[in-house]
Image (tube, rainbow, N blue to C red; front, side):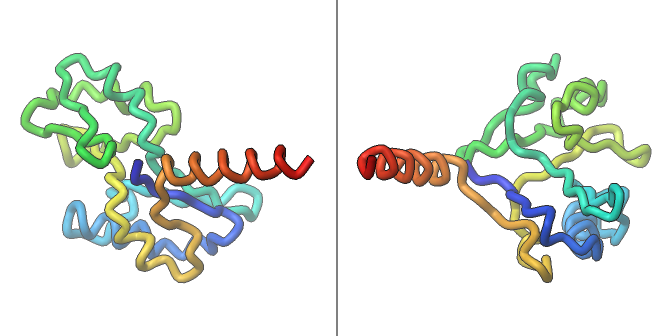
Length: 145
């Protein structure tokens, strides 16, 4: 599954990812309209972005949320009624809303922000590939014992 991964220790909170995202989605450089949000907590950067868990899919009363062929959670704007239940129930708080729009928005793992990140604090990962690699490494460690 394609998703945006993060290494918060490398983030310098420059905001470039937020600007690129809002420009791609809304043709504005407005951090409040970014699918990725960067904040500072006691001098450490926090990167908030959708992990494609899909909890929102089950919450949506009109079935406007679905997984595409790459397992990325997407919104059918023509079906969305703007109830924002997905925003309220998102365990990552990564489903976004802005008063200028009647429907929510979220990261679709397009990778534009990752390409612009000067420290590679965000990058496109693949959950299945990571799981397979982890299982192989775990098996190798057991075999060595």
